[in-house]
Length: 113
Image (tube, rainbow, N blue to C red; front, top):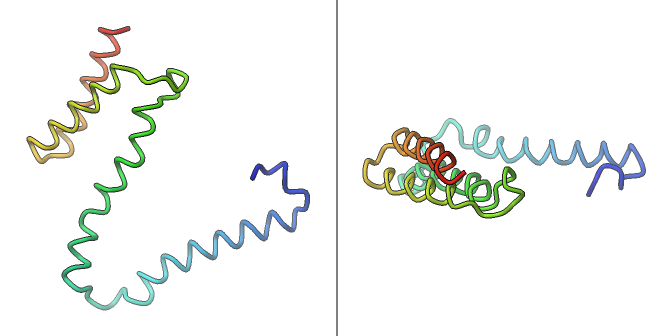
């Protein structure tokens, strides 16, 4: 809902405070309630993969529908995504995968215009 659609400032502040409280409670559930206890091994193993599950969700829309091309799919970006994934799988190193993807994107944009 756009801010212009909210007619009352009280309603806007209620939404802001509600979202802030919800965010606080989500964090408190992990940090405040179970922060001083050890987690079961299964939970620790699943939490280890959280960053690698979130990063593709953040990057995929920018690679498939980039704002730089007006939302049109771009071959240079798709090639860079494939190279990044392949280097990441092969080397098991996130930094090398990102460097390979960035270099491939730069070369792809240069070569394909």
